[in-house]
Image (cartoon, rainbow, N blue to C red; front, side, top):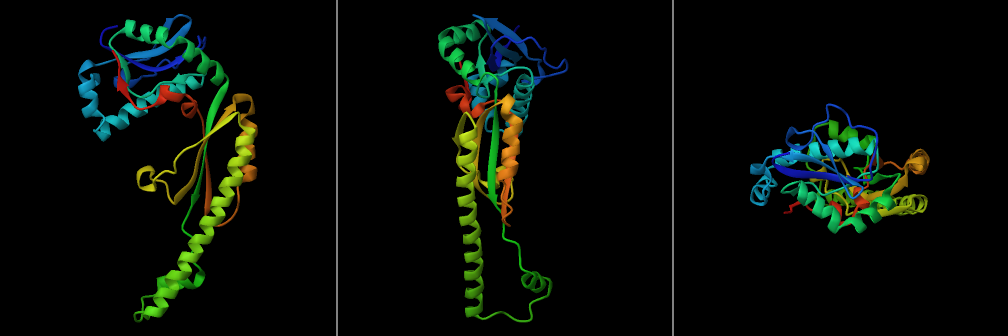
Length: 264
């Protein structure tokens, strides 16, 4: 293959083929590169987009970044359906096949250790959000009617105080619920990670994120894990639980899935 080598993941050898029409980053289909009994899943990408200098500029381009992340994830998802991949950080690029082989040789012991730990396991994500407390019927009625006159300063401050107290109450219940939920799920899972709460302005999700956690669960136990999340969900108004997955175990891949970069 000519061009640079984009590496999506490293896996133990697997038999099932990937989807025939699967395309990767920059449109090229992913291929297997086998070395020392491990498989690197790679594709060819154009040098003018993936040199170190070009990457610095492209990573600031939201459209380019979105398209690349989507194509990268598409390949990882396809791999997750047929094996247990060790996903590498987005935009891990080598000069040629020999660079990929050298990486495998240099990190073979660590790659095998992580792959053995992740074998037969997937990642599930659980988020808890605090949503805006529902308006009372009196408030809704008042909002529907045009204000006849401004309220007094005292009335305004009382209303703001009541709203703050209502929000604080929901936030407290959500925090306590999240702590209980995480304890239950972490005890069931083989491993867990607590991530920083997501900013709704960035994620686009409604409400304030209280819990943002990942759980490493065996495929065989995944159905039971999903049922456990459903059972533990609380019906308290203003609190929402979101379950996502199953994913490749990004949160448990260690430094292999960190920030993007280019290697020689």
